[in-house]
Length: 229
Image (tube, rainbow, N blue to C red; front, side, top):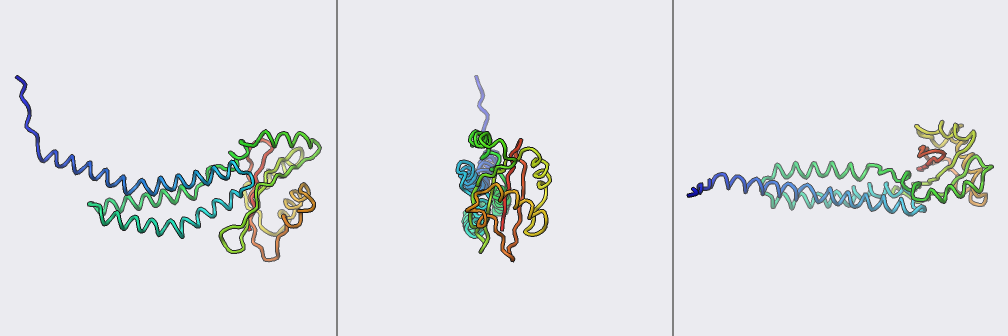
């Protein structure tokens, strides 16, 4: 005859409490993180599959909206959770960890320039094949105003060949400011490969503009040039 053990009410109470704590902490932690992931992936997909969208401007708008819209929403969410939740200190820690992780997700780069290049690489290779004599070929990767007053982003995909490969390698790894010999050199190279009708508007830098250009080597002869003014 099988003897049935008596259940321990104290152990069952602890188990139910642990399950409730786990559920409460997940509810406090997951919503901000999942929302941040969804927003960041949506912005990244838009930048990758739409070559006319400015990658830098999209990322900047996400950060600004996170500060002015996301922060108040997180405060309201935290207040509601701490009002409802039982273990307030533990839930406050979970919300704080979610806020830190969400800020990291929203500010991190997902490698959009690299994935945009891969998604349109065949077209760029075909364009380069039609201009075998050109050492530099420049493609428009978007120009857009930033969220800060008077700021703007201008981005390019550059195919460098021959002697220009070493030139663009020298541009990578540091910031090119608004003025100086290096700025004149990179603007001269890019504008010379640009449509003459649009050259002045695209590469003009005002006397008081504080522009910062970064050149990133993506792969092979492909370079990403991002100018933030």
